[in-house]
Length: 153
Image 1 (spheres, rainbow, N blue to C red):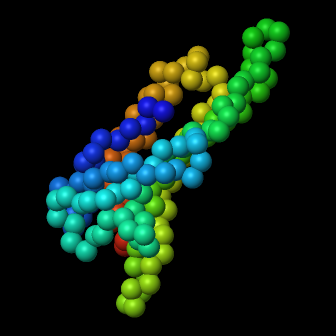
Image 2: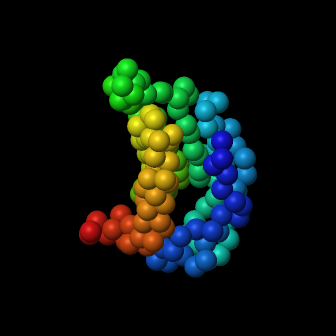
């Protein structure tokens, strides 16, 4: 799989974090169709943030379909079925939910659903959609953080 984030990974801008970086260490994904990294060290100024631990996970993972789906074509070459191949990037981070220090795991999931066949016949538009989506996530990272923390869009 080509998904291979660099380490240290430079984090996107967020209010209250200065030049955040994350050291990634290869971890075990729950199945054979993905990769996972544990965030084992932090860089920049991230006061109060903790890296991964046995009871405080901080992981970054990516998975692909266990079996890639294919399109079916009729006798004239038109698609009669184009099921979705689903790819996911998942971040898991232990967060404190009360003054007693109780923790729960926060999940962030980006799901990419590609109709089977599009990767062959329209790879440029597939790549453009991904470029736009990931660029928007990076470009609006701080705003997303502000909205999630304040509840105001």
